[in-house]
Image (cartoon, rainbow, N blue to C red; front, side):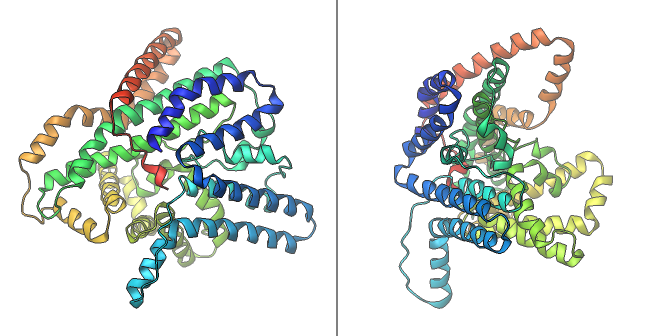
Length: 467
């Protein structure tokens, strides 16, 4: 799917955009729907029907909720049908193997695991489509009576498989009426190329380091090798996911949509709470609006607030994957956020910025061990290796990895800060024309280098496609 997606973007995007620009407004949503289905089917044709079923469920539920506008009980029934059916699809395809394996392990049974392949991006488009019926029920939006327009929203190809999670409320006006201008297209191209550079030039290259370390015996690696490996993954997942988000936002801008921001320099955070306000912003917003607040949020006392936070973060972990590693990963962050709510957060605010940033970064890195190891045992052994449990602090492997990848590590560190953004903002105020010329030159260089890399390289994983 990864190679297929990149082929689509490079070979079909120019002609797709050209056709889109020349089409009359009334045909553009139909064209978006067709290109979205084609894009998805290019990588996974069998499961297009699952996405269409999810779309049809929420479209129909929306019409019925609107029809019985004065009968709240009937509206509630249709909302529950929509939510239950969507979550059932998600549960069957994403969690059935995990549930069956757990039951077999606990009760000594031998239930056959169907081992259903996971439809790409099902967590993203299910949450996205489901937000429509919930917001309609809450009277935050108006019903969309045109099926093609609603289906175009669900199948928007820029972000259909890996986010950001765009709620209907975010693009309600633009679905029916949007404008395209040279400035928007130019801005979109710049955003897209920025994301492409993050993904291809940074994430792919630093990811090779983690691939090497992850394949080693965790009972024998040195502490330095373990830290180098997990730091490589720390940067890989950020540039991979934020890069794809930037590409999606850029493509959306070219189509006339304004997708919400999904990342805001998360590794500059001074607390875990701040980190999650900066990382995968649209997912955090979804859980806050549709789970945390309906549970009562922080309105029912401190004890209930803690319970609500732990529920939300356990579900956040489960959303990412069907394993105990993901569940513990989510719960881990929930506990850290609860601790900050108990008063530790105020202490962090008073500490020197460098200290609180380092504290947060280390805890996030430890969390990534849980996120990308296969079992809890693997995670435990890897964390042990990080802190010297193998009795080896450093070795020749660590020196080789560090020496071979010093430049890419330096680039990743620099690119994860806001230094360049601040510099360009200041330059925009002082020398806007020179900045535009430099930006065009930089974009051409990025395009040439990324194209050359993609033609030659075989390592192109999109990490969040599996969610």
